[in-house]
Length: 399
Ligand code: C5P
Image (cartoon, rainbow, N blue to C red; front, side, top):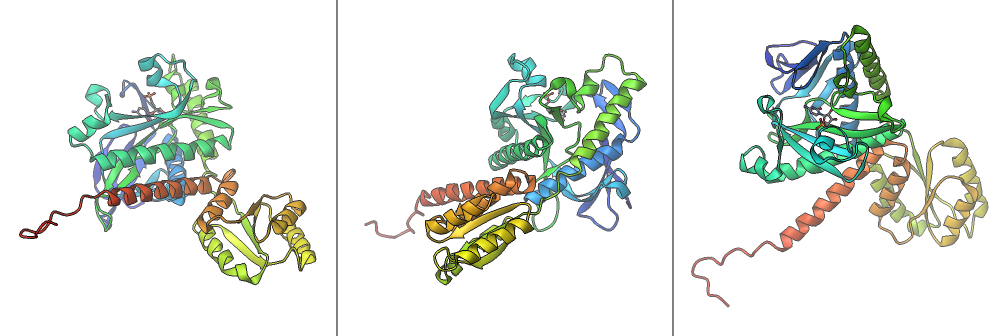
């Protein structure tokens, strides 16, 4: 990639200006690996490329789900170890989410390593090498002017969702996500200037992952932290784990094709059917629509379902009609059937998306974000209701 002046350099990456694109920067991962605040340092040939690949694939997944991130493009094979990102002002915090007790949490709280954490534990650490990145409470983050209360709330909610999305992706590969660190920035330019985005990297240094839930099979940077002797053979084992992780993460951003077959009992329900189809499209899902009556054209219902079943591997039916239509379709197909019944179009679309999200992490993330948006709409509406009325204009007589 074409690079301009160096903007900044960290322990494992460097950031450059992008010529003629003031809103954009080039992030380059290096072959360095460090632990203990840089007390242990080595290089592993090819690690920069693997780190860039892993970050690019994770960020592509997050972008597809609809999360705000700084990632634009790059990081795949032809780009070597470089990624194009939107320029941000970084917030000097590490946001850690934990689903299973490990690492510093075990040391601080005396918990048994491997304990399942429900709800997830969320912690902020101040980025301050001289003081070994101390834990910092949300109140102090606000007091010290590091972030606004609304940003602290948004970082917490986004970090929790990112953890769940990545845990889902890993679970599908029979790997348990233990914990995760992400960082945030504020967009430096453009119409969304100041907006919070997930920034920095999410690579194999930023999480703990245990295949089959077994710590002894770990594939992440903890392998390097745990080394008694840093021998070339040991570093080679670490490199092989990083390779395996980059490969596994390769399919994270792939959406699995899914089809929604919608059957209405009569013409009177077509409008409702179209509204559900529009809501289904919000999740990026395709739908096929038909009118087929369990009472008047049962043979056609049978033929249609058999045809659809034979044509699509991942298929969900939505029926709009009397219970007999849902019962009939359900009796013919092995695929899931959702009876739209009296539910709203949004509810039915979400039920469809949730069904297909079981083995599609992009959809899983989209559902989580839709739910978060719906929650915040409720909170906003409540806050709006409770806004105190504006004070009367001077001179207005009080009733
Ligand atoms: O060490 P600790 O248990 O606090 O780490 C929690 C998570 O944050 C781990 O996944 C670790 O890899 C990650 N982390 C990180 N960068 C740091 C500290 C922790 O990516 N500086």
